[in-house]
Length: 232
Image (tube, rainbow, N blue to C red; front, side):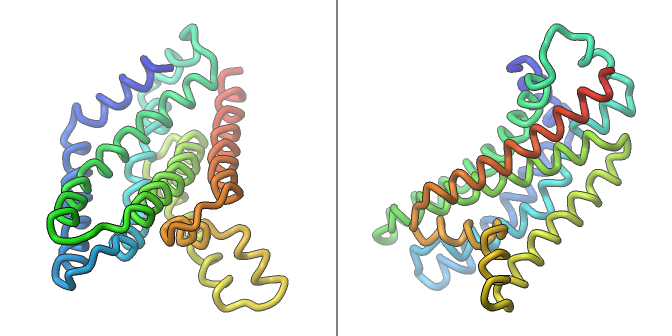
């Protein structure tokens, strides 16, 4: 598993795409931080992290679209399937590689904390909640993108399907805000963004954590099932 993770993680940076990805993320993230925190002299990171989640809705499909689709297109999936590793190790290896890139992106926000420490008194509970929130939500996005990459040989189709599904998740959140009664309760339960906002407000909920982990595990399971069918 770790050899697959290492191979795929390094693969992101064997071409300019990995560095471009980090560069685009850093440029957008720092611009948002400057506009929402520095200019307004605010130590509240909830606004930039809310925007970063929207940014990752667009950037995550670019990261995941190649994970299996490229293997299929190049025919290297046969090497994976004949290697002495279990299907779940292949899935987890690729998932962790993509998650490693996201962690690199989040490390680029560490200077924000230094600025906040120098300029004021950071609300550490809220800041911790922001990082937990974006990490959990990104795990869900990556698992969905990984699954969609496993069902097609076209990177473009994988990316478009990911965009469409993420848009669907966003619409659920919008509908839950407009709905009332039982419908609002049901939509709130399914809403990734509502739970994300709960974490960012430093309201740590074990049920929300289980929700993110369960949804991630579900799509990783779906991916493993797709690979099992292709292997046979």
